[in-house]
Each structure stands twice: as C-alpha cells, then as structure tokens.
Length: 330
Ligand code: NDP
Image (tube, rainbow, N blue to C red; front, side):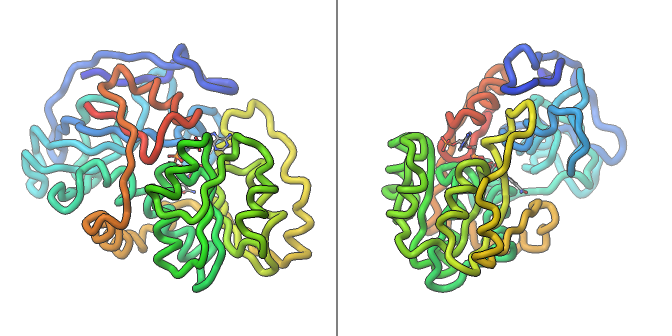
C-alpha cells in the first residue's frame, strides 16, 4: 500500500519536497478492525494548518507518518461483525491506498442514494459546514442579501444553494478568475459572480449590493473580510468559516483596518468549527441528498487520479486549481 508522509514542515507555501510516497505492507485486521481499500480521498484546506507544529483544534500531523484525511472506501477484510466485507465506508484514514480502521471509526455510507464521493463533499463535511454557518452561526432570513467567498469551492457551492433555500433575496459569490465567476451564475445558482482577482473587490461588491449585505460567509479572510465589513448593513451577521488567504502566511499579518465598523454597524461576527455541529448532520444529509437527486444542488468536483498525484492536488487546492470538491480517485 502506498501512503503519503509529511517529511518536513512547510514554511509559507508547501512544496513537493515536504512530502514523500512510502510503500508499506498491507496488514490483516485484528479483532474489531476492518481493512479498507480506499476509493476516494478528500483534499481539504485545513490540512495546511495541521502541517504546522502549533496547537489548534486538531493536532498537528506527525512527521514521517501517513497524513490523515477523509476517505471513502470498500471493506475487503473484516473482523467486526457489524461492518461486513463489501460495505462502503467513510472514515478518516486517508492519504493511503489501504487503511486498517477500528470499526467504531467507520461510518457505513450508501452509494445508491448519492455518489459515494459526495460524502466527502456536498453531502458530507464541507456541505455541513455551509449548513451550520448559514442556519446557526450567521442565520439567513427571508429577503437577506448574502455574500459568500471561495464560492466556487466545496463549501461555497453548497452555501449558495442553502442561502437560496433559506429565502435570500440575492446571493453574491466571489471566486478567482472569469471562468469561475461566470460559472457561479450559470451553473451554481448565484445571482452575481465576482472575479476577485480582477481587483476592486470593494467596488464590485458595492455594485452587486447597492443597499449592502446582511450575511457574509467568510472562507477567505484578509481583503475579502475587509470589503465585506465595508459593505455590511447595520445588524449584519458574519460567519467566519475559513481564512484561506492567510494559510500560507509565514508570519501573522495585520487584520482588516476597518474593524471599528463592527461596532458602528452593530455586526455579529462569529467563528465556528463544523465538528461542533454534528447534531445538524442528519437533517442536512437528507436535504443534500434530495437536492442532489432533483438536480438543484450541482456537485462539481475536480479529480486527481492516483495517489501519486495527491500532493499536487493539495498544492493545487491552495492555489484555486479546483472547482467544487477536490478529490483523489484511487
Ligand atoms: P475550496 O473547495 O473552497 O478550495 C479552496 C479555494 O480557496 C480554492 O479553490 C481557491 O478558489 C480559494 N483560494 C485560495 N487562495 C485564496 C486567496 N488568497 N483568496 C481567495 N480565495 C482563495 O475549499 P473548501 O470548500 O473545502 O474550504 C473553504 C473554506 O472553508 C476554507 O477556508 C476552509 O479552511 C474552510 N473550512 C472551514 C471549516 C470549519 O469547520 N470552520 C470546515 C471546512 C472548511 P479561487 O480560485 O476562487 O481563489
């Protein structure tokens, strides 16, 4: 079985030299374990944070050990009565071709309801992130103007659909480059798509929302957060979900220079981590499955083939090479 190891901690942008592919022997399961042939690996931005040796909400990756991440695979050997051979399972031992997993740490998933890999994307963790953010953290109300950054990504595409479902009057997204910005409108149901790389984000946001925005779902931080604060209406809400524009910063930079407006505009700004909102998962998975089934939630994905391309997929994710969920197919 081949697996990806971290061999050194990146400073700034990660490079291929920080990783290596290691071949290890496939072992048989012990009592209570299953052996899984991984079919899909998830590539996620938070993995960049785990490459730093700092205390956070998840422990840092260990050097010279397989990386971890979400994965979907098929059980090929089982010593756990409740997880039979042939079951398709969601688990956390990704970045490797075969995984030995304790049965309580796998969740059986149904590939006939939605495609298996969507449990790593719109029907799984990223989708639930969008749902928790817009129902609980910065709730969208009927008639709201909503702005979502990294809108063409895994979380962002679902957030756009959820904002609509919750009655938003206008859903604005931003993404890098003209093609992604255009697809926000033509494919993903946004009213306006802003190409932030073209510059003048403030101006474009103001034009898209002349009367201001009520809810900002922040995936990016930095300039996006500053522009959103400048455009918020009084009593607006901001869900701080991610700050990907800072993930490769070697040292902390200055924050938005207009935070005073949080006070004058009486804004509510709240950060969150999806794992605290698992109680919403059953509701959300039901909704997502029905939307995927009726075609009202598109499930774009960018797929890298084979574990040899896993590192490139991760480096690409941080640079915006993906539309929708970034995945590795094994
Ligand atoms: P995406 O599928 O959105 O992929 C990341 C995207 O970020 C890229 O495609 C790129 O799109 C964009 N990006 C990269 N650099 C920049 C930059 N400097 N400025 C603006 N955009 C940039 O990833 P996810 O949907 O998985 O995650 C989105 C965000 O949500 C991340 O910040 C992630 O950390 C966060 N998150 C938070 C969770 C939580 O519990 N709080 C859980 C899951 C995710 P583009 O081409 O448009 O620039």
